[in-house]
Image 1: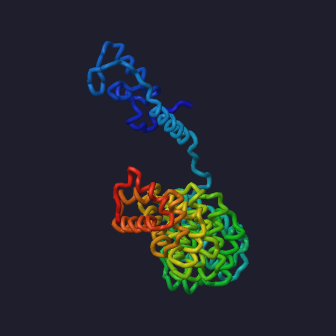
Image 2: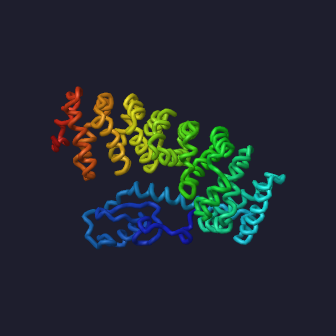
Image 3: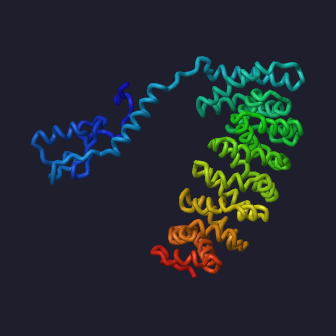
Length: 429
């Protein structure tokens, strides 16, 4: 199939300056301007000796293939062709807003009957939830409409049902719908929600833990997002209650390590772990559950986004503030090397977290194992480069402190070669 550029917006830098069509064989003149080969050849064959775009006289008439631009055009063309030919048609059972509102009313009635302990068919509720979830997923506007149609009535009914559900596919639909409502900031009385459900309820917690243990990956991700959204939106005691159960830490870390480094799983778990770690006593629980080992493996092996990498390093920074965390990090050469490797390679925030961890271990608590691992991992050269960069005053001071430790440590000989390098013209001491 040929791409019809009349129906697709072609980037201007992919168009030939002469024909204004998508270039098929881009070539560059000595002036540096790129044209489609057929167009510029006709120009030159017509007796012209200037660059059409700049009108500079050509020193030579060589046409140099622009392979980089040709590859970019090929990638863009394939992508545009896929979008134009494979865009799925609207689902047959796609709901209108009126139908979604009507379905929401039916769902509310069914859920109220469940609250009254009346017999109910989970298949009917599951089907209606599935249709509303699909409707909300079609666009952000639909998500907001679904939340508005539900008002503050359906969320407490759904949350209170979580503790009574044993069928995992049904649980997944309930939790995903809760997330739709929570994400779109469904407004209800906070006291009203507390009176209808208790996040510390044994059945509710047991159902959540069971879903994290037994559910498929999508359910596990949805449950973690649900816990965080509940805590953010309405119920500040949500995380403090669930955090008392030590199983939650093992399951959150297992979600990271057993998901084949799934980006959604990693991001969801890291976000909630970071929220739990805001309470100091929870940091030791994360470490005890094997947090340092999992975070080090993610840092060393996973292809993570900058955001996720920042979260991992932030968690390690928090862990380094407790005795158990420092001991685990210092005992793991893989962890220290992975932290050093991320210096100046991800983002400013990631670098700041990484430097803070190293400074805490090597300077604040004077751990020689950590200092030796930094030196062996070529960390001194990176700290020197960072010191010479446009970093914040706090990071600059921590880098100076680290270099002072390295110079005075037993690994001094390893550092001397770094100081003698051409990039070590700044000596902070």
